[in-house]
Image (cartoon, rainbow, N blue to C red; front, side, top):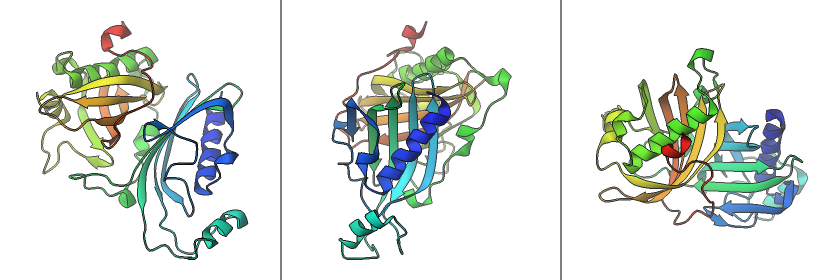
Length: 292
């Protein structure tokens, strides 16, 4: 599929979500759908419903894997609802026009499609809180547009090189290799669920210093690389991180790597430590040694 087709696919998917109409989503007969890591019927997750709006939106695509990933914020924080007659009827049945009990979800979705355009894999993760110690609340988040910005041609790495760099990062977290050899850009910053967590007043360590400390250790399993874009230097990698003492906790993680000149410049991390299991196998190299 073309990148444009994948973007249209995600746009239509999000329209189905905010109108709570999963039947509008074009899925294959054997489509696999998960919510919070476990198999679930499409539309059964808490993220679906009315009213909904999505004030933070960012979509990244990979035509080689026929995959489109969405990162955003979804909320029921709506007053004076503008909706289709059908969805308005659903809202009206709730008996209220205003919704004082607002809720905000940090949302990640992955759609993988067949060449026909039918979706064969749907993965949804939604967390309603950023977590202790993370300062940026969901309602204050904004998409990092630098992820969409093309990098100079001489700064670009090949698809294979970017997957290896991301794999080296996970190997360093796992302490399978010396973390010092993981290629870090001098401007490297780490953001977790919208909050910068390196070079900050209460987290003064640089990303490299933070990364090489012995306590920064997890087993990184079920690794996947759904989106790689050489033009923007983006590599999205998902895995399940199993905590090793003294690190905690265990959980689902998706990192969006921005790679320039073969060096990790930014990592935008989305994680949810409330997910006990992820029903997806690893796809691609499970260690950097497998990249050679």
